[in-house]
Image (cartoon, rainbow, N blue to C red; front, side):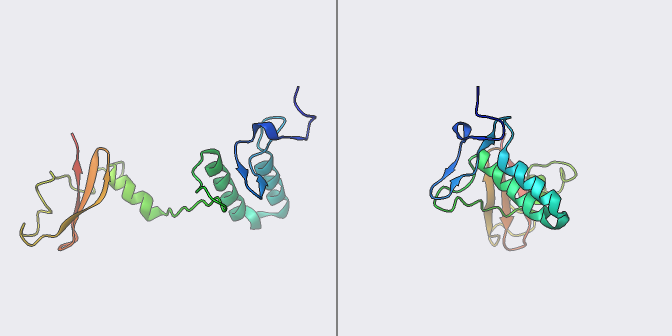
Length: 146
């Protein structure tokens, strides 16, 4: 039998912040105590804390999945916006961007510039695809592996 109702069971914590205590405590019902308490506080104070609550939940999720930077501050450095997501949709050829970027072979180049004047470089390389760009004409395209 676990600790009495309402008490925090520190045995199931997965993350301890040195000098700052534990952020990942769970209550005896298995629910996350800290995010639940923050949610109740935010609801009691109205919509003014919604942005803070959303950031806290995102940080909590990062802690659970070990994607925070190790160190004294345990930082989550996240810079994602709609443009970043759209660029990945284009590169992964997902709707509605499945035909936005042309697909060429590695040897083809941009298709606009003279091969001797084109300055081509790789902007992204992940398993299965490479995104290339010509800095002369600013054209970009994908090279798919296989």
